Length: 461
Image (cartoon, rainbow, N blue to C red; front, side, top):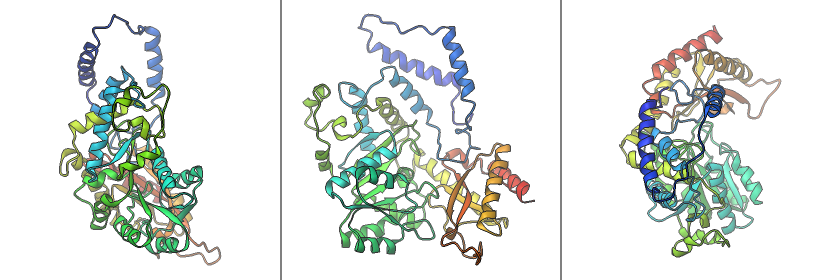
């Protein structure tokens, strides 16, 4: 399967590294692991069979959800670290992996232009966002969290968990936070933190962060950026001017989340929370009667002392660190070119869709590498039914897409005339959606298009 190295080479490199790791503990008396017998082989064979009940996420014909295969070096480094199974909650449980996490997180902070920061890895974007909003609540008790209607649904849920009011800000017709609506909320409600999304999960929309910063100068609020999906596009050289302006404004925000397990080529789960002001570490400060003994020798807070999570897989840090060494975060570098390739694939398929009279496109082009479209129909309901039929038909030719329910106003005004007998304030249409996040998607555009065209023809003929 594309995305996977030849098995023999992968196992060879992993075996060489494992031997070197084992040599570091050769001074200890032998303590062999349990033998793997025929019963283990049989169980692993069952596992392999059960895993067939998955879509081929690593293959370029999988262009549905946000699933990007981890780089082989991340898989190998993770497996290598698992033979030690470090826990990065404290130095006592993960000495080397804790140091590697500090270095890996610093590399992420530098990518965003933050020479000073406080941060750590997490299980994913949800928990990282929870920590950001928890700190926001410590700084602005009882003040509301505001995020756009296209922000990830967990922001409202997290706010409820934290006991903070939540304000949903309408979007404009491109799926970005509406600035007039945001300013109205800032005038009429006690908003303490605004969440700007850089890469909405449905459409990839990027909120106008540079303009949100201008509003902060007038109204005084905290800015958190949810860049769990889109953060790595900081390195891309082929963004549109509005999107580029939003990413260039990141240096001025208060906190930021990015998920290495999305575009960072890492296994699940690997998220990251970053704070621009290290002083927020005071809110985390705690003690443990049995955990931090070897951590106390440091003048800095240890990773476990700046996280709401306790046990965290040190292997995630090792895998990320290794990947960064192979593919450093450099504009124009190999890693950045991979991001650019995915965006180029989305733009090319959109160009082909724009010439196809059977479909309709949103008013806004892709900001990143997520593409949405809908088959034409007499009503949102008819287009929605056709989207679901094309989705099913594409599966039959091994093209894996996704579906998304979006406001019909994201499309040109005359696309679906309003039914005067049953008027809807903001009708919803089920769209086809494709996340073209693999570098391999670009050379596979023709294969993707042939299957998409055939599926559309089969449904609409």
